[in-house]
Amino acid sequence: MKLWGGRFTKETNQLVHNFNASISFDQKFFQQDIEGSIAHVTMLAKQGILSEPEKDQIISGLSGIMADLQDGSLEIDGEHEDIHSFVEAHLIERIGDAGKKLHTGRSRNDQVALDMKLYTRDEIEVIDELVKELMITLHNIMKNHTETFMPGFTHLQKAQPVTLAHHIGAYFEMFKRDRSRLSDIAKRMNLSPIGSGALAGTTYPLDRDYTAALLGFDGPTLNSMDSVSDRDYLIELLSAISTIMMHLSRFSEEIIIWNTNEYRFVELDDAYSTGSSIMPQKKNPDIAELIRGKTGRVYGALVSLLTVMKGLPLAYNKDMQEDKEFTFDAIDTVKGCLALFNGMISTIRFNEESMASSAKNGFTNATDAADYLVNKGVPFRDAHGIVGELVLYCIDKDIALEQMSLEEFQQISPVFDTDIYDAISLTTCVNKRNTIGAPGKEAMAKVIALNEEYLSI
Image (tube, rainbow, N blue to C red; front, side):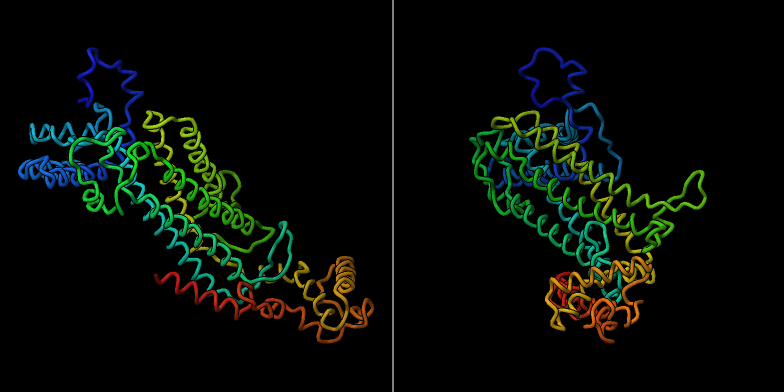
């Protein structure tokens, strides 16, 4: 059944029907479509546009369709153009003429806008919960590794010693910002478009505030043309989940590097690794690599929707139907990646000895050796040069700074004394850095306490 056949004298070409139809993908929000219709007819009855018996009959029919779709006794077919016509056709089939009044006072334009908002709002909650679950995993790793030393990097070169807790904490902050973005989007989009009609409202005495309240919105949208053509919230969501994927991809890249034989910082659980068809020694970080790869897929959805929307005049245009497939795919992709990454990182084994050894052998304590000289009265620029000489000496001898004898230290600068060894130990290098946000144990304890409070909300 088509909702618009009266104007036409010929059947739609089958290829045109197939090209135009959206039921293959918009069936994904059948639940939101039915919930929106129930709220709509409830409002119509309150306004006296429908009788109470008609309302009850329609709601009963819609509830039955919902139940049958959920348990699989009713299947969605390709005969109908979209999920809206599918539901309406089955409603009329089940309850007769009363079902023909379902669409009173609304258009498919505001109906699909409502369905997409309801679906998006629900999915934001799911994504937010998945991000929070990952953050809980990261928080537990942080609590257990405040004394697990490792090198911190800039330019992928060893820079200064940090702890695993501090390194993981950087991602905790990224995901905290991600949740904040999701919250902002959910708040900004939470206005109901239903009642906007095709683009210019309706002559029926609708109570849009009442329908909005029934559906959990903060109120109705204030311009009917914008209501049916707004896709900003989807662009914002795709941008936000692209950022989530970027964070997951960065983290995955580090896991991939840490998993190499050269680093051996981590051992991936067998459940989150695969082998090679010809090389029996291989244990590949496929999950991390796939997450890194799927990031581009989500980026593509964002660019696609921006491109679709960039030249559209007001109000609704059929181009906007293209918002759904790649938005649905991007949402499903980020949900899958979050769940899998959480499983991978929660089962990973950190090789603490390899991490500490790498920090010791990479001159990550060179800055602290310079600070030592500054505290002895040597100007920083001179101290910088002296420590540069120390590093060159150690590279030539293939030793670490802490392996130098005091005599070797004093050959380069007589200022060095026996306390240099404590000054450049990993424990001292890390734990004397206790300004908030630094890797020192006291500073990390404060951050972990703040994180605990954040996660309890």
